[in-house]
Length: 421
Ligand code: EPZ
Image (tube, rainbow, N blue to C red; front, side, top):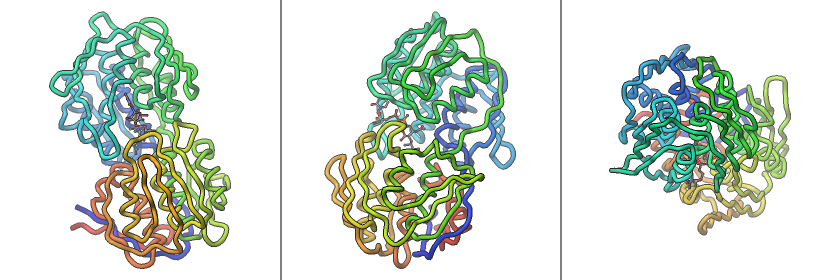
């Protein structure tokens, strides 16, 4: 297993290119199942999760060809010859459950393993099932697999989600494109990745309105055609690297960064005393002077503060001036980075979904362990600010969601290297 060694750093300077969004690509890829014609994605991120999704689609009979060093994914699901999404693949990545809606809509049946829990929570699929059943699917849980069928095809319906679930919105939206009649998804997720999916589906001939708001309306069509679609910029990678200069000073320009993707996050950076300005290439971030200020944060569905940036923000609050209270409202167990940061000298108290961070002057480098994707990168950022050397182990978590972190950070002056054990 690889580890990453980070040494405390002086100010960072330079540019970091931001890749296409993992969480957009993971829902855009299953959309290929909705049409017999080819779907090509450009600006795709080069991540292990994308490889896992390619493997899953391949197991169903789709063809996924990676071009231009992985930045282009040419897909075709003309010959789907298997409708079972196997536990071995699904357990590795929850987003595998996003083949359920498209397979049901295209084939009329699907067998998809329940993903099982993961480090950050139980992550049930009740809302996915609720929505697809409203569209007329019959879904039964047997031996850990969801057995879904829609013998008479899917029929449009009004679906009110009790929680604005991203994955449930995506599964229902994809299925509704081929359902007979009109579907309205109420309390739909509003994330930019939903808008990106709807944009791609419209390019394939789907009739969708209201994406990006809480009410999405879909007029079902008989079939979808092929398309080429650019994956939207990754707002979580963007937010993560915007924090780098906050940890060790300096000024960094995030190429391809878009302010509209990170507005609530930027508002909190301003409160903490960090300058963000728009340039013609993206976003430029600089720490004005000295220590950042402590800021309270509550994670919410978009457009609120993203749960996927909570760990990174907590790491920054460890050396802030004052005390910060972070409330994690989306997942039930997303503070596993806290004890690792405490090993580096942070002063953090966790009670249920609330973490209180008392800022300390400096962190001390230490051997720490990555526990999940976003926690792993928060430990690397903390290592940038710490005195001495930090060794982050189990970085396979990191490679799921970040393209060559050590390369991007060392290009702006960070002392960081990957070692294989
Ligand atoms: C997506 O997960 C993202 N993953 C997550 O990013 C992100 O944290 C999350 O949305 C919230 O923004 C992908 O897009 C691949 P949800 P998803 O359905 O769709 C509960 C990362 O680090 N829930 O909005 O699984 C669920 O347990 C990952 O890139 C139900 O109870 O998120 C959770 O507590 C981590 N029943 C909450 O809702 C359901 O049927 C949010 O889940 C579905 C969800």
